[in-house]
Amino acid sequence: MKVKRILQFLSNSLAGLLFTAAFFILFASTFAASLLENLPVLESSMQKQFGSDFVVEQIAKESGLTKEEIIRICSENPVQEGCDQINNPEKFSSQAIEKIEKQISPYKSIMDKLKPVMFLLFILSLVFYFFGTMSVYGSCFKLSVNALTSTLLGYIALASLSGALPGIIDQGFEIASQDLPAGISSLKEEIAVIMIEWLEEPIEELRSLFLYILIFSLLSSIIFYFLKKKLDKSNKKSP
Image (cartoon, rainbow, N blue to C red; front, side, top):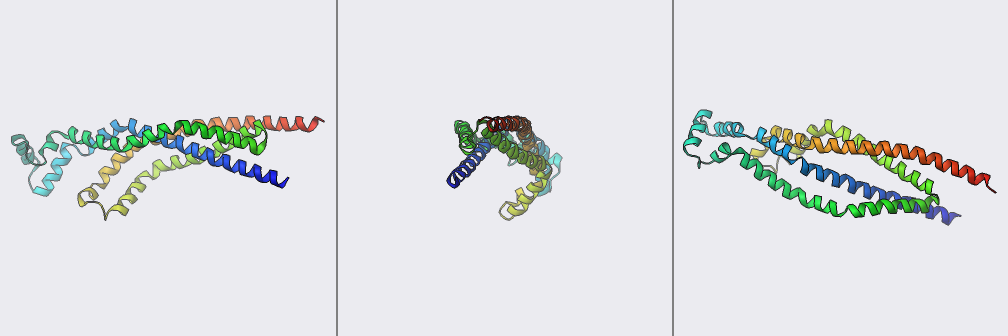
């Protein structure tokens, strides 16, 4: 009897770990895909924050020239240093986006390859929950409760993240300020705006996904709870 309880405990624990791993893959793959899909927003935000006017202002501060003088110089001599970015701001934002896409794409590719593993982990977690309960309804109930708990925590975290994001970015700059070039450190506010606009949609998509899973897991938890209870009662009545 003691050995049976230990085996059931190990089965339930292993099932929980497998489900957590599958849930993480789902979260990571969705987030990576959403970041790539939202790159046009990032590019648009970069053009808005670091467009021609911004570059002209920065050059004017450093050189002591007026904006009109810088624009005139660049129109007369486009090969002058800094003029290419003034005359073609889209070119520089596109190059930055290409670099970011190259950085993210390998992670998305890895997550896509792990999707079959994710489904396998979900199935295995259900199987081990069955070994831990020896009941189909009981295993489905435990899986639903696990999904409900994990999704609820994820939803609360994401709901809090949107409001806390500016502070997190600001703290990140404070920590990394010593290692960042002075030019980048001075652009903290602009970069923070760009990051917030880029991350806003992926975070919202994840929050919507968690909300759907939350509703589904709550309903399935209730259904399987009563089915399990009904089956337990019928088993007790049967001789």
